[in-house]
Length: 305
Ligand code: CP
Ligand code: NVA
Image (cartoon, rainbow, N blue to C red; front, side, top):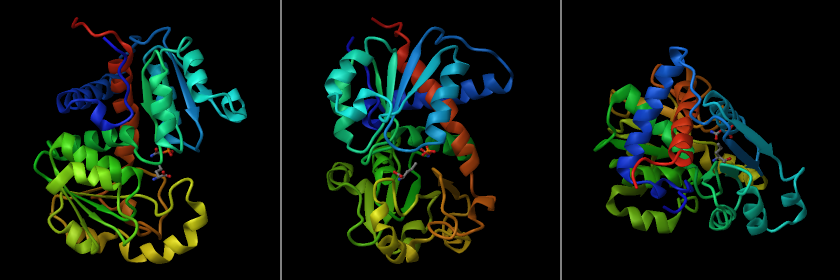
């Protein structure tokens, strides 16, 4: 069987994604009970970071160690990648030494080009277009707190960025409805919207988006790589802050998620992460468990022929 990559949620079937979440919850329980794991013993994950990270780096590195393997942090500043060695050449060489590669990058094409030349699984640790690993953790958190998300309504408030694009893919894969509230000119990827069809609706008014929603999520107004636009974005996005009053307009069972890092006073009010409806800390922790399940799934040979 050819090598599997995880560049997008669409690289897995809905059944596989469901199984990943169930395994993530199982691995979480095993860790809580102090059960030591070594199914990835002697396996090595390479991690290429072209952008900053706390959660992604830590969860992949700790996850590999907890499964008996190792992770190697590769910064473009210290590797030949930063000096112009072609992505395809780097992929050919690195994938002969590693068991999987995680990449956090700018252009999504860096991931697809690397994957096309890699002998081992490539994982998207965030690109300008998508952040699928974060969605595994978000979906795990909803499942733990409220059960199946199938048929529920999710509201995305703010920038139509990489996280929002991955929510659009999640809506299709996990079978929920998504309302995106964003300013004109900051809509999510048009091709992804077209593929999602009626399942995803773009509105301008955050209150309209959250009405009856079971999950509300947002993200920074200025993603990595867009810092020059920060001042303009702060003004434009001001009506899109998620606060307690906005959550009050959602379904009474609503939960709030934020992939973090958060800018209190900007996309969320100062107090929102302390609200009992916020599960952002569980969500951050679940990066660890969900990605351990993903690493097992991608690295270990399957039983089926
Ligand atoms: N949510 C997330 O990906 O966080 P980091 O940027 O810290 O990895
Ligand atoms: N949209 C944010 C997510 C950070 C985890 C960014 O790309 O900077």
